[in-house]
Length: 329
Image (cartoon, rainbow, N blue to C red; front, side, top):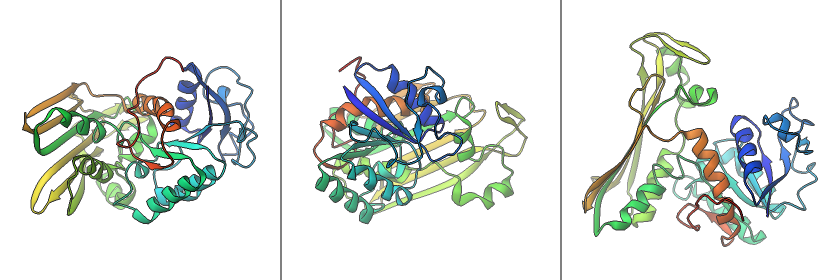
């Protein structure tokens, strides 16, 4: 039995709680969220199912389950800088960590000081920590790395994730700027983006043992050609439907990794495509794409067994036993 404390009970945290409860061999023993509207409420009731008898605590210090838990699942922020102290606090309680923090997925080149500090802290306390999800953590980095296993040689990796944002949760649509005017988008450009694309480039490079001398990323808005209805309102013609981001990894002047992320309301041809150029060259395509909210929550749950078996330290998906669905422990 893996006993879990859930930190962060927003939309993804609540979905995670449901997935954790339904899985044999996993038990939620605590919930933490500083939101005054959530503190004191039962984790199960907040997440939309039965009363679990587990009141939400405002801080980890006030959570009575720290002595009995094995793992903390953290779904709070995307910024590793904002999350560093939270990770270290959890580590001090001797808990392994699985987190949805995108910047934690492969921070060794993007934020080396923080990565090294977390790694050393985890090793000192003999716990393991990983950041994962559907993307980054699987579709645009780990999966293409695994697919190269059948290649004699590889010269280029190209991944394209194109998804209709209408079925996704509202915070995701907000994150990609859906519904903003062009001027509003430009004013908020530094806050609107898919987080983790550069980290995904470096994870693939790490897997291939490619030393990348340069990684470039750019983003542009996708504008609607018609009025599009979503569950949270209507996106007017000419306004922002979402974003298109491209990250490129180079060896010298040669582009060896290309990641294209496109998410917008109204996209008709959702898909996840991986193109490997090498011997052999091939393309793997997932028609319709994979729902990110479901997949992120699922891979967090499925990674719990792997992280509890991992050696101490800060890990990436390349470092742990490959997560897979398990019906029980």
